[in-house]
Length: 67
Image 1 (spheres, rainbow, N blue to C red):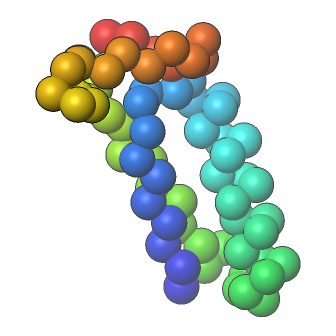
Image 2 (cartoon, rainbow, N blue to C red):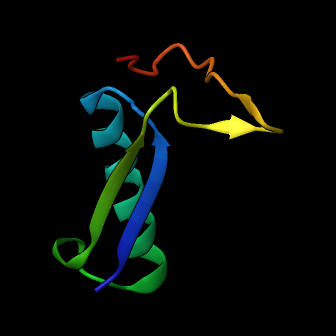
């Protein structure tokens, strides 16, 4: 049973649903695993908790949900 963890900045639920569906489709096709055996887990990163080069890195994607 494949388990896929996706670490990303918060995205809207509809974006996560589309991504999860596409990831599942790829695993079904390439790994020959039934879709109901695939788990896709999103780990939301806070937009104020990511630093690059010692400086706060602010995501710029328009569909990032800021809290």
